[in-house]
Image (tube, rainbow, N blue to C red):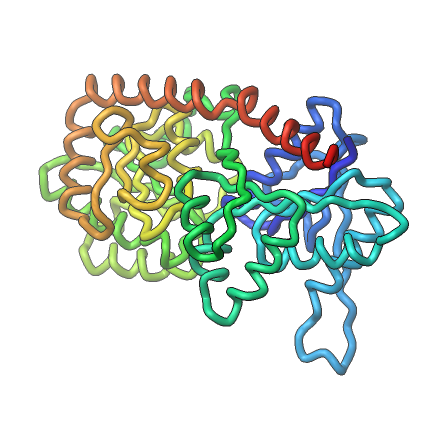
Length: 374
């Protein structure tokens, strides 16, 4: 197949999943055309089967803001014609589904261009549910030829919010060879020179991820006499608040804010516990990646996280904002190496047996074929 994929080219989950899907499809013999404003972050290698088409923005005095949705639709239609695309697969409903639908309609009646929209979370729970965006989001979903969601939780929220239930659940995935625990002694020494146990947080540092809670959890762990360290991977608006809170608690020297990193598996491989105290998660991709690297997870019991993390078996779940309990659970894991290793083993087993690319990617291919045959 010849597939067009559009993602936000950032460190968010939808961009990571969309990029990973494209690479996996290419390895299975399909040709993938990424259509976006810039090269997606995790898309490092282009070749004959993985191509990139940049959306160019027109500068015109009449426009106070550049019309990205229209520019994207135009580029989608152009690529569909020149590259003879079989379908467009857009990740994140707003504005990508709207752009894809415009592209599809502009090509009628000369050619058929099915549009598949994958819902990732905040496009439904935050942006789409906003009263001002709700009608256009509903339109984008309803007019798509096929719709998928990354968790059962997200499917149910979409049904309740938009009264739309033609949704196939295809979860996020990991490549077991890319995400596995491997020795990175230099990194471990750099981040924990005293040999202390390491807790890691990975996110885009938006308020919904509650990165400041990670600092609070570290404080509770230290109060229990465990000289742990906290490694914060990523960047965003809440980073400055997390750093400020660490200084206020006089534990900044136990923290390492390392910014965005291309090799997340390296940081997970030196971690003893992953912290995911989010206010909302439609799936919990960071948790899945950590589990694949044999890292137990301490997370909020929200959204789709309980579908990924089994409480008491592959990690521990707590209520949002309950940093006392999260600190207690993290300390419990850090103090018991045998328990931590056993949970890590079960976490890896769960991640690979349920979310392996060899299980999930064929579900997407089958879904494509079904839409194309309609």
